[in-house]
Image (cartoon, rainbow, N blue to C red; front, side, top):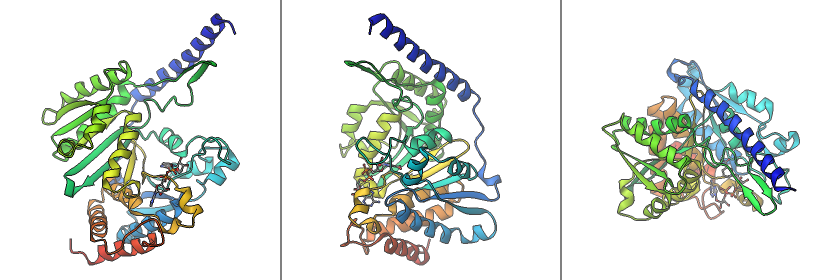
Length: 389
Ligand code: NAD
């Protein structure tokens, strides 16, 4: 192909991307107000099992939630709704990241507790489908991925705010192979997209009496997009004089997470999408691995809570699904309860999970030499009942 034609085609492709993103900015400017859960009766909690180990761990989390919310369910304050059909089999059959009927049901809920969903990769037997999570984040505009990581005995008490709808991911499938030798991807940061996640991190710090927010970028190299993220953070910080704002480059920040002295200083961390993805998995490792960590995907109208790990197909193939650790999704359930305003119930579950993890009366190993997820859930329920709060 002639160089002139290649350039014209590339310009056209880039033009389409810019047009789409300018429209997005206009939508972001008309930001919705935050939903008020206190005014809802009932708050509808959707439960989605997902794939692989998902239904195993999600069922146990549901059992615990229903126990904690028994009275509130009876009085009509909350309602649980099980949503079937967000499975890889059904998604592949319909060739949809989220089947339409499932998305309708999800949109009739206020918050979702979701088991992990499989995303086909190259070479899989499944057709090439978009990740259900990426689609859900987009459809429900879940712009903030919030992941707490706590290891009290090491002085680790971090909350990560990862931007969920921009950065290197939003246009991940829109990169171009300009020629056989030249590939180009695109990364996007908008003022509005950066503002809403950074403001959320500062608000969280302020309302929890935490006096520092750390912004992580690579703004020295990725100057336009990361540069914008950083300058928006510097602007927003001015409105929170009681909260110190510091900035780290992602390479040295990831190194400092393993520096036992320095890492105690980090508390609330806000990062663009890709860095957030990588750093939060690293951070979860200090807590005992992905089986122990939950996360929240928050938007102004909807919120979705899940484990940070995937569907663990190997555990299923090897007949070990029932030994999966449900702590991850139960930690997500704690975040869900707190998000919708049931702080007492959240504290009870959190305390019970801390006790059950540290007592080690029952240990989950992911194998038959450890407890099953159902036995662990019984232990959590027993602890909730017996513990004096
Ligand atoms: P994975 O997180 O599913 O599993 C990796 C390993 O971690 C497992 O083999 C297992 O040893 C361990 N593990 C994970 N969860 C555990 C638990 N609760 N208890 C005990 N051990 C646990 O990672 P993967 O194999 O890379 O991904 C599998 C699938 O999940 C892929 O299709 C991927 O796209 C998808 N995925 C989904 C989500 C999500 O829905 N939020 C997140 C990540 C990956």
